[in-house]
Image 1 (cartoon, helix red, strand yellow):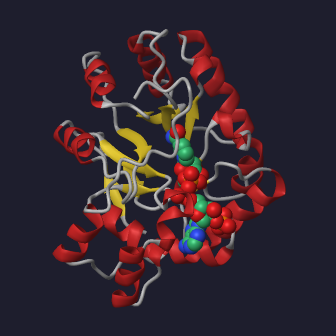
Image 2: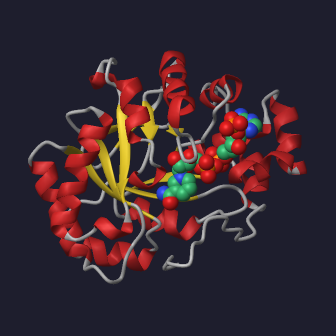
Length: 267
Ligand SMILES: NC(=O)c1ccc[n+]([C@@H]2O[C@H](COP(=O)([O-])OP(=O)(O)OC[C@H]3O[C@@H](n4cnc5c(N)ncnc54)[C@H](OP(=O)(O)O)[C@@H]3O)[C@@H](O)[C@H]2O)c1
């Protein structure tokens, strides 16, 4: 599995398994299967309600070989709430630490400095390795950077129908890695004629073309897959390349289609 070295020196696997809507034994089984076939990066969140299901799978694994991302929900961003939530996550996940803890969504009602300082306390205590955010715009990132606390990752929706070039450029300039969520546009990209044409040209699948486009932009991807076939397919995005024209054709598919936009979002 290829990895990206973050500014902090932490190495983050480029492909991870998304687990939103995976719960119970389906989730435990999916994580077990994924790790057996070569995944090492698992993406979860308090809001997904599956920490314990993931904990069941990873508690018997070599923890040093795994990269676990989780996220603080919007109601846990006050200093003491963030600390207590992380302590609970560690118990639920049956782990000593979380590799990357993210603020799931920005919340204008809580000063960013308050949450980030709590995350620093968690980092200094060895409970989390990296500090990151999710669904942050350039405006939110500028505010966060003013605190002087290192932001390693911004996890955002990114796929050919939502090509967030300027956000990506800002993150690159500021040493923040981008993780793409919904990298397959929740399945919508798979029927696209251009994507299907490129898949045929390269002898790959539409899912692999979408993921490869992201990987070539230096983006970490966390496709969610529950079937073994999909999981395996999504891992096979290395050792081949889209050429410049392929990349341009995929870039041109952008239509600003945001699939995840809840009422509380601050886009
Ligand atoms: N930070 C945030 O606010 C946020 C928001 C949304 C998502 N996320 C994270 O990002 C992850 C991925 O996003 P997502 O679940 O929204 O969407 P996604 O990964 O773009 O798409 C998932 C869908 O694609 C299917 N699929 C996966 N691999 C496939 C393949 N190779 N061929 C055909 N179909 C395939 C899956 O089917 P099967 O399950 O049947 O395999 C599932 O229906 C989430 O699970 C979550 O961890 C984060």
